[in-house]
Length: 200
Image (cartoon, rainbow, N blue to C red; front, side, top):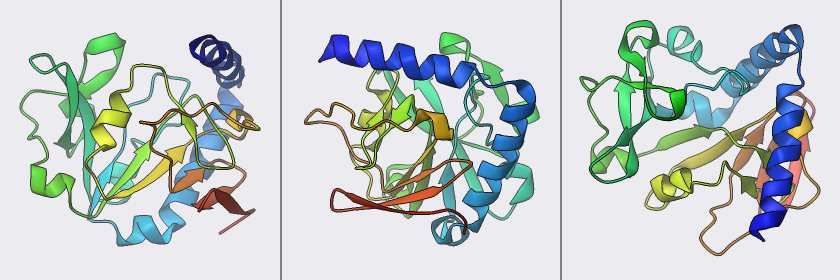
């Protein structure tokens, strides 16, 4: 299983890195618009996003586009070896380069409370690949699986269309996504089946 996942990661990470800057910028803009049109996004008060690694869809402009929402990003907590969510108002001044060379909220940003984590959060999370059942292939550390274990919020994966797989390996602790957004489609997952729309 682990070797299969490693092979899949290598393949789909290469797909993601293969986009040109122009293709990536256009896809990112379309993905953000599709997200903003989602009912789940329009209704969300608390939104978890991420700071990408340069090959993942860029969601940070959402913070300026929708200042009425509260945005949270993952932050590594060394004492626990886990990630928490911290609220960010201005990514330009409240992010710094941290673990794995990724941008994270600075220490002064307040962490989400346990009550907020159980509130109506919308989680917009990256991934290496996804399939039509809502199975997500991550980087392999299991950090998002642990972060999402206790939440009842909506989980939406954010991908490029080339990251769609036929069928991905799934383990017992994996949590399936409720939605997946690409520049081409929005996928809505229900009971191991998927419905997709070309436009919202």
